[in-house]
Image (tube, rainbow, N blue to C red; front, top):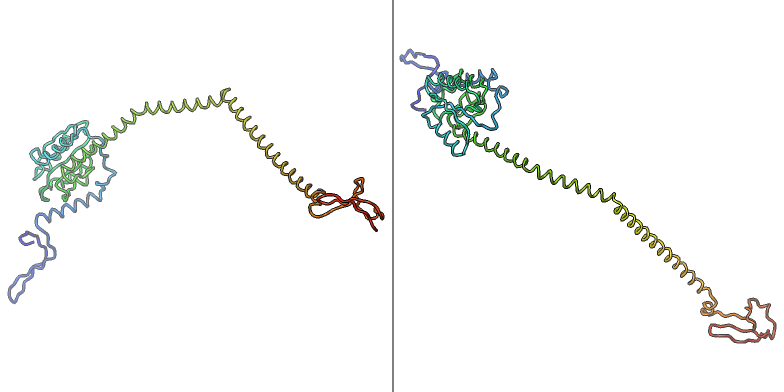
Length: 325
């Protein structure tokens, strides 16, 4: 952009007829910032190849944070923002403030000394490296190779909370967790604390419910055992036998009723057949027959002689008749 200072690399040539000088640019970089960015990329690439940023070298972040050490400027706004959020979110842990300059040539040395002081402290759950936003040269102390290696080798988990959301420094990659801002680091600490408290409260509730649940389970088992005992008691057995006898009696009654109904049906059917074949039924259909005066049925014509007197039996009565032939 217009007004920027840059470093140009190329060849200088002379146009002899006019004595003009020409500079053919092969590479152009912004002076200062461009050089720092190049150094940043080269160091980052070097440390990446060494595996310094791999997760296997990093410690697990604590579930509950009760003792935190923060390395930052004691006069900076980052510290006040960090403490303010912890207070506002009612975090009740302990904060140890390790003061250090966070900008300029002395910053890397003081930051390393602060790390050495922290390594001598016992019982720390977490370390926070904090600084507010700024230009790349303002944040450059956190790209110091010795400091980055110190962060990567630290046995206590570290949060790197340098600059703003768009600012990246090498301690971000070497630390266990990168927070976008110091305030975000405080929010992460308190949010983890809230989550663990919720888990503890849930666990406490479940533990308190154990006696009640145990009593309910015992009561259910007692009821089940009581039911089994009742099934095996003499009274229960007698009731079962009575029930069995009742069932057998009902089944016998049903069988007898079916048997009687079936035989009654057969009797009715036979009776109908007998009635249809009876003499009265035959006479009702228009037939008649002859009998002697003594009541014997005449079933053949050779049993009759001329002038014999016989009776003809009809549906509506009897008549005497004389045989003529």
